[in-house]
Image (cartoon, rainbow, N blue to C red; front, side, top):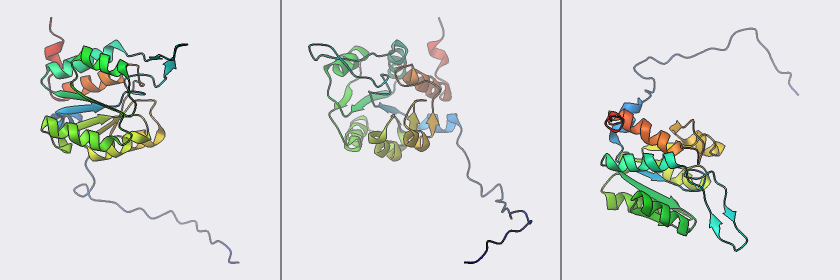
Length: 194
């Protein structure tokens, strides 16, 4: 067995000229292209918990700020869609309350549903943002221009996301995303005037 050789020489570093270094896009550059936000439900619009009462009726808790964010996004002329692997009457009710017409439930594989919504909205993946929190969301996140994760998303999702938000799922992360996108488009201020 050969002995490991050690050296006191510092490791050699290579320097990449600035013109060849990868450039990070600003929020404005990324946000300008986004026309459609697609969102998971459990773990994004909710905190991820599913509660059943004694009669087996499912309950979810949605954050009011997320609802306002979705309404402001749509009021600004952009589209919003929901894609979830579960089926829930509560999601249909919440979507209707917010005026969200693009709702796809019961899709274990979310990418085909996302592609369908993109076609309906007449947008390309380069114009789409997807916010998700767990492994079933990764195929869509890898397909669109802007992959976003709540602060408490799984490690794999946070690693794949271009933006990781400060807010957790069910705690206003959709509102945070909408505000950041609208600010990048210089469209936020129109909603803050009285």
